[in-house]
Length: 144
Image (cartoon, rainbow, N blue to C red; front, side):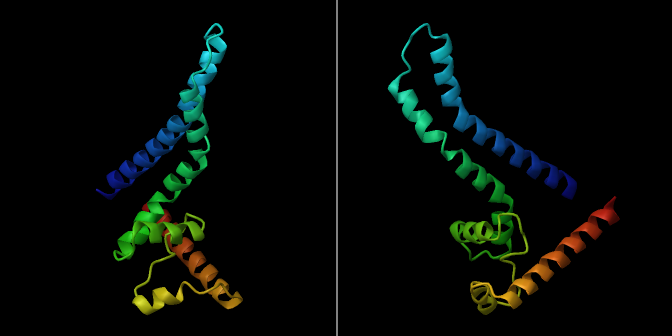
């Protein structure tokens, strides 16, 4: 059912966040443990290298996980988009707006969506986002 699908997706998303945290912090935790409880044992250089490589990736990996559902949504609505293009669209939109990148008007409209933002275009986009938000909130109210 749809509820099971949503629940499964939420669990996957949560596990991905936990995985990112674990991958980025396991090496510093091990290094700090060796430093505090190793009775003077020097921290191996390779472990320090792993710390310096993975710890800065925390933000990047978090962005990938955060935008993942929206990238999937954009690609579902635009199968011709590569993952990188969908990620770029989601990232530019703030990472959490499913309505960005959705177009049923054809390729010419999608090309127009890549223009620089003007005041009028910004207002139209904001109105579209508000309308989409209100529609989704109404759906949630009806279900509960």
